[in-house]
Amino acid sequence: MASKKLYKNHPMYSLFFIDIRMKNRLLFIGLTITAYLLFGCINNSKKVDNLRTFAKAYGYVKYFHPSDEVADINWAKFSSYGAKEIEKCSSTEQVVETLKRLFCPIAPSVRFSVSQNEPKYDLKIITPDDTTGYSLIYWQHQGVSIDMKMSQPNTYKSVRVNREIKHEEKIFKVQPQVGTIITKNISKEIYCQIPLVLYCNEKGTYPQADSISLKLLKIDLNKFDFNIEKLALRTGNVINTYNVFQHFYPYFDVVDVNWDDELIKALSRSFTDKTMEDHLITLEKFTAPLKDGHVSVNYNLSKYAAPPIWWEWIENKLVITHNFKSNPNINVGDIVTQINGISAAKYFEEINSRISAGTKGWLKYRAEMMSLLGDKGSSLKLRINDKMIEIQLEDNPYDSGRALMKDEKRYTQIGDSIWYLNMDMIEMDTINKLLPILEKCNAIICDARGYPKDNHDFITHLMKTDDTTTAWMQIPQIIYPDHKNITGYKKSNWMLKAKKPYLGDKKIVYIINGSAISYAESCLGYIEGYKLATIVGQPSAGTNGNINPFELPGGYTISWTGMKVLKHNGSQHHGIGIIPNVYVEKTITGVIEGRDEFLEKAIEIAKQK
Image (tube, rainbow, N blue to C red; front, side, top):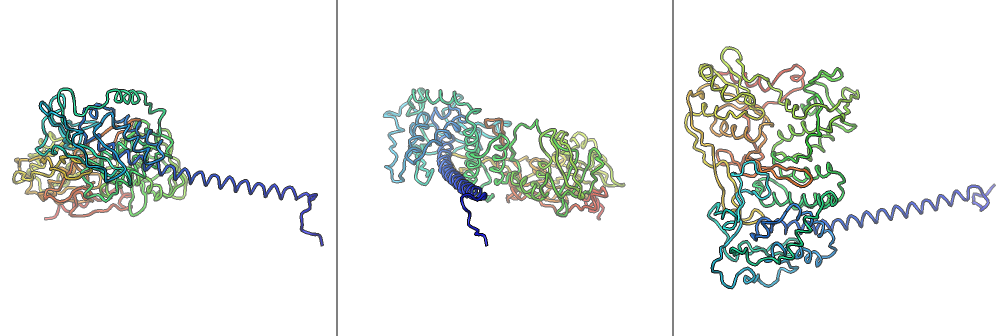
């Protein structure tokens, strides 16, 4: 019997050892890659911790330290420039020294240390030898206006009391006391001390920063190029976004989110993001847990398009509900099981993770819209009825708002005595012309699925007495960071007056669903609060209050809710919405038959005696 031993002259000998050498080499490469990735992960983790430390200091100084230099810095560039400098640090000592170097030119009285037991802050640092002729300055925030893209400048305000060019006066009565120093733990080992009140005269705030250091910092900021420092752009944007919400988002008391954890996740993603679209997704995932239906991260909207269809989740299936261009391969009622090779459920799982929504209804509505958007000229590959169908994205994405899919008539008569008003299409002038007819009818159905067309005055004809609810809109008044010790709220209301003709003696039915948000919910708040109608459908979006958008370098804009809105009885509205008296679900059969089951239920109720 021949031996199985491989001799050196055997033809398999060399192949055998080549195989061994290759395996060893692959093993070495694999171990090297693993070690590299592990080291990179650990290294990035340390960088993320350092960036989080910088983010904390950034927000405290930007929004709460009232020095002249703070008010005169480009904070967008400073966030990214600072992030780049902090990223270089490899030790706690280096982080502290870098923080001092970064902030001293704009906040010379701020102190950083590695011990909580540092000597008590020496108030001599911020107190002139002779205070004669000096005023006290400090920040007051009603909401926030610093670096906001103000669409309503009188709604949100941030002022350095006694120091702005117009010599801004107090927005509200409460002010921090002279000598107020906040001490914050900005990492496991690093602390900062920040004065909230400074002395100032015609020369500036005391103490003044070193003019040379400030000049050099501004030169560095002017030279900073976001196109080159793309990682710093991403981390800087995350830091900016974090601080807007950390100090001014009014709903942390009702939203279950660990915002610091979300900061760490977003910073970590920033290291692996490659494109501007990747960064967009990071910002979306970052803000989604806030559960604010007004939150949207916009970037280069002109490139997006939608296909000529609409779909909805009905009976736990993704159903084609509209086929705008009569694609012969697609029928209303068809079930979509895959999108681009992924199950429909998995596809929407990813979409949902990028949406900030207070209620399931708004999440569903936004997800159904976002899932259809993509680059103009691209396509969606759908599996429908076990067939693969490719559909082009060519339509204006805003046309997909037709997803509300109600009767496109502004108003119509149903039978002899019921009138239907489409509240997102009918103008108040038209309603006023209809008032004599509406006064004689038996029932009115108001379709409030969507956004009203500035017609809230109609509500006054449903009210028997004047509005007495005085404080359902509330803007927080802030002088301390981290939502601590909010001093109060600026409270307001519409204060509607009841008008003739009075229509509230008729059967009034309102139809709602998850697409009703913001102004729509302000109107519906009266309907619910004063019990002016029977509400039919599904809960609204649970998000109300004036938005307060801000821009970020790179072309991104983030909108969000800057005020707190309550129900008329003072209870929570955010994340709850307007609750219907009669709940309605769509059915696949109803879609195929072209029925509006919400309207059908409203008509049924309107006919009841």
